[in-house]
Image (cartoon, rainbow, N blue to C red; front, side):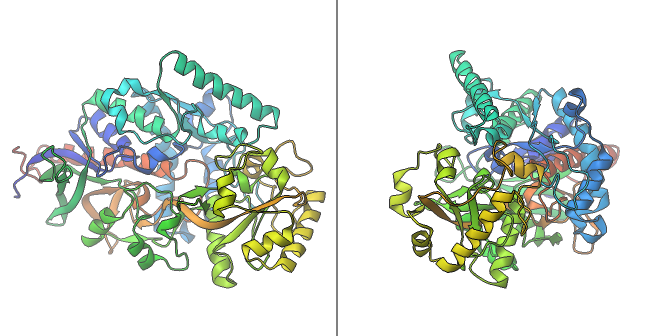
Length: 579
């Protein structure tokens, strides 16, 4: 057998949702090592809102919010399609595991000290939409409570900054805060400020969002004695007799003065769990697998380590893949330095519209962001003029609502000076600046304004879904998402189908085991998160539909690895246990 520098039960590659798998394995008595290639911990999970989509979850039960797994199954079928019609990644067995193991995982994490809050009002993304059944308007999503990073000691410096920045604001609160004109918006903002200022006065260093989730998990892992090796990348998966028995790692950055750059051969008794994200920042892979959805590295908001080499290594030993053309699309505009700025509530609020360069509206601007990106790509293929499209707003939108980092009525002069946001006294002049057909734009706006007056979008049904209204303006009548484009000055930004990660990748079974191209299990190899083809298929069911599969399938993979270790305990180990 190979000579090993270190032997462990479970090796976890990546430090986002895979940390749940590491924690579960440790709780089951396994020896665990986590390897993270960057100098920060958390991956895209740490950079995200940190939400987990969990139907009929324990918090709902405690708070008397009705739900059922049968409704969730119906919702899955209604939005993602019947399992038999979808990718094998969205098989009925994997859906059932997601729904049932998810709440078991929740209970486990609470036992380990991770605390959650329910995201009241952050409805399923298709709840209330035409033809959809089983959706939940009050939210099936949860996120970690604010965490005082002082509890992590020196490890606090390894966290990626939270989405909310210096504010102690939960992700689900952002939808309310984006509309400070409402009583609810002002009430939530006041609560955020009390939490933020109160924490500072008590000397706390609070983080929320994905940073809070990762911080909770790091503390729990520390309590279990699980090491997390940063700047440690996967170089090779070691296979013997068709089983993954170890891995080769490169630990430490060469020339860092800390003895870095060492090659380590790690033997595993239970397996290797790949939870290292996808390939959003690898243009070569994006081009190879693009299909009809040619995403660009320049448009992504995924974490810097999302470069796909782990996925390549798994494919190199025969792992099967699916949906490699798919991403978690996020309509975005580009700042002057090229940084993508994601648009969520901006395109759902009244007095906004999205058109192609021909001046035509072509989809419901308030639809779930993944589908919005898919529609942009589809329209580009069919007619052209969708890359970029243009988000156009009037002065009421700009004076009433936040736009990216800009408070209502306070548009940064640099946006206009740099040309990333166009401003004009007339729609005709705005069209000229954007290269849009002005005659067609005038016609489109006239029709749209009629819908705003009646409150019914006869073309694309904007504002009918619960989540669309949540992101809209509840005080605006007769439709929370529809308002006329009529009051000068007018503004526009070029919109691209950005993303927060890829969601195609390795095919896995319901235990998180990676399958080969013949449909058989690759023994000793597990995967979860954005390096896998998602159980959600090609739809984004609700807030937390990316992190949910990552943490849940990491959790079930750890349990399966523990079963392997137990089964092999009385027989010969697949690796040499000598250190």
